[in-house]
Image (cartoon, rainbow, N blue to C red; front, side, top):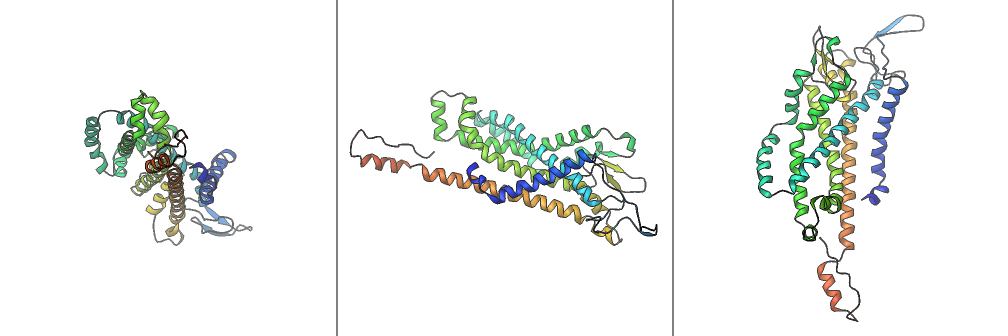
Length: 339
């Protein structure tokens, strides 16, 4: 699989897209302390008033400004690390916890797996976006800015909730995949030879499971992003929602999904503000596009690798035909067969 991806231009282009966004975002946090330029009113050189926020796009402000005067280009750069970082953290945490829970359960009897499936199937019916909304809403609405907890505690709580609510489906999936591998002939041989569960997983199951987990990781990445977008449309922004006295709500962190929901809920008759939500919307669409494109390249590499292994491994019929055409009875024969 790595050999296929090494020469895949589209795969490296997707990684370059994510890497560039993270590099710019963390660079803004390091060199500018995460600051975003704010321009309330625009004046000419002689002091003449020109316009007030929201300002339209120009050569000085590529994406314009919002109603608060924040430069939208800098908002997108600053928020990239939050959007990508949160989705990566949630996807990685889900996979790690699902492995720790699902793989040991897969080695148990079928009765336990059936009971667990009956128990967790009920959680698969409820949309995780609504489940996250009901859990997070009481703890992430703030009226007084002075009462807002630290950023670490808010981010940690939301990442933990998003991780847990996505675990049931992933645990069931990994149990099913592991049990399919355990039913293969090479696993029967490993158990017959006395291999312990830990040895079986490390030597036989993990190499087969790892390519699948890379694809699942990208799927969980996109799913987490969709949940963040859904929550923002309900007015629950990532890291907390600050309820304004004049009505409405505002995000505390410059995160892409939160900015999309914030600008979308601000939709009004003002000329430029009608188009504010298009900036984070296009950024989110590009993020989903490149994530899905990266997933498709991983699936392609996995499929090609399996085809190469299948074509290079002789079948049982080919091995038997080889033994029938031996010129000498003691010539070595490749009797390895496809699992």
